[in-house]
Image (cartoon, rainbow, N blue to C red; front, side, top):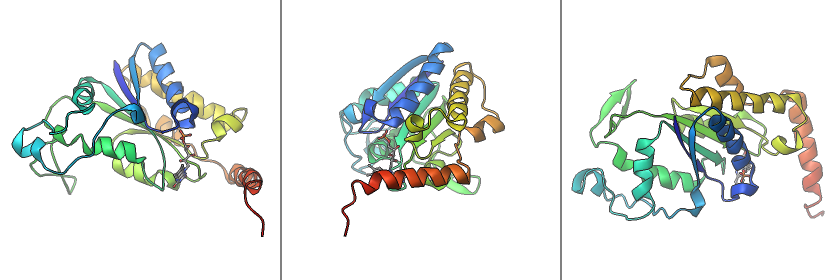
Length: 229
Ligand SMILES: Cc1cc2nc3c(=O)[nH]c(=O)nc-3n(C[C@H](O)[C@H](O)[C@H](O)COP(=O)(O)O)c2cc1C
């Protein structure tokens, strides 16, 4: 099973998004997957110019010549595509949005209607699974509304109050979540599906008392940096 992953935070190996992605990838690798990871911010990916050359001029081929030249074939060749993104201003990080826009050559220009919504069919028939790992600063699940909307049909892993992966690592709720992430990675690497119960546990939700502590501790820490008066 081939897994092709993008670590999308500009903090790269110093960030929590990459830490969580590594937990996922290490478990998948231990289960036999062939894993490739790239730091998205190291790559040269130009912005889509909206010229539609990839549809009408040179079908399937973009006018830009940059790292997408090898990324598109790598996406087509993988079994599982993983995007790991921090939530920035309620959204995926812009580096990932730029990459997504450049995947237009993977779609055909025609309109089809799927479940009442107009969309484009794929240019290539080979299907792959998608995994979206999203981390957020706020403790609520609402931080992930955009990732859920953008990547429908994907397996979603949500880590709200992402510093908890470090500060709360002794807590059973965090340990259980990490265990679930590892189990999901192992199952996907072995070609298995994620059942509903595991799928919902991959979206970490804090009970109200934990959320209260998170907010209190955050505000105690941030008070040190807030000018008084
Ligand atoms: C510019 C910026 C905007 C952010 N916007 C949000 C936000 O809208 N909602 C949220 O929950 N967290 C937000 N965060 C917090 C990050 O999502 C969170 O710290 C994330 O886990 C960082 O991942 P990293 O350590 O891998 O970079 C923002 C952080 C930055 C730097």
